[in-house]
Length: 168
Image (cartoon, rainbow, N blue to C red):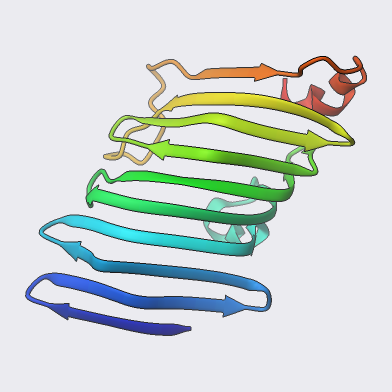
């Protein structure tokens, strides 16, 4: 772990934070990273094995290797987060894919928007989008608001249903 940071008069600047473990790297920068209750961070993660998150996420932790880039801006209590992510060999319960890519992810004060998800498995592709309610105060998805999901399998053989069937 490498850290170059300063804190003075309530302002925190992160010139460089880097954590490396094998081929996994996480970098964080922010100038200032925190000031007057606001965040200003850039986070880049490469080759993060999601299984390493099991101590925090529990037995239902997804599988795969994550690479992502996020910008975190705004009030620390409800920041605006924008970024992109790719997971190689993602696995969620019975569903195993070759790749999941979301080139745009936005978390706002009340929603998580992912307009362009690309899923690939066994030579097939599906595109999807998601709009999920979000509550920063409880760090949860409210159960009284709609979740919107859409998927497009495009013109391919119906065998694609065998591959993506566990999603439904």
